[in-house]
Image (cartoon, rainbow, N blue to C red; front, side, top):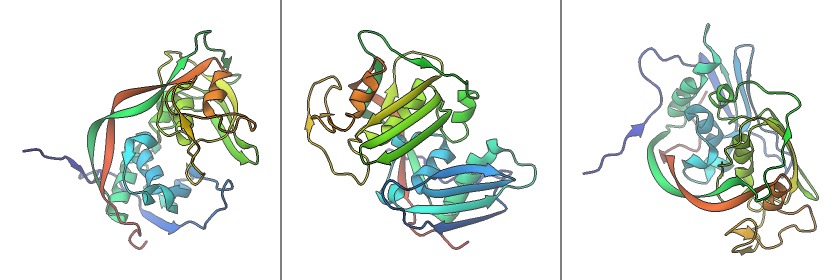
Length: 272
């Protein structure tokens, strides 16, 4: 007989909780103009235009592609403000978020390990051509522990008529892979073995960004299986083309990955 381990938040005795919290539907934003903010200031947590999936990623310290659930957990947007208890540190926010999600969204989930199709980010035959960061960001591990930023310093993304522009500074290869995963049909995992922080300036046409039409696919090519056929070749190229300019490439592989599987969640959170 097989038993699933159900995770219902960090509701154990003695765990801190937000003093007060407000969760409201976010106003709709036009395509390409949505601004998502997740941060804390003056003892307040302030999240703008976040999805339940965004919150789960921060609460459970996982990547976006490690969460499986209904489509609405990515599509439906909320504005959240919450007051931290006196003396609480930012390191305690994930535990408090777990409790908040369980209480307001009735979220329950379990962990599983699955073989997952990925793109491995590796150095090309000629070697990586990276630009060392002009300014080093804080400790990458500390950043990842505070919401899964995965070694990103500053990162700006803007959708324009000619495609997506991504400017990343003081970013690890792991952080770059995490960011690129938002625009590909499978997660991008850093397997370069290259340490350090670098600056990137990428322009490309997103292949599978949510809300954009699907593009024809082909096998083989520089990007391996699943490389879109000449997608956006006259508009800056694809994600695969963009990373090649830095002596990198994406290879199709499979790898075991720990997943969070949503068992239940309410689309409308309980009242504030």
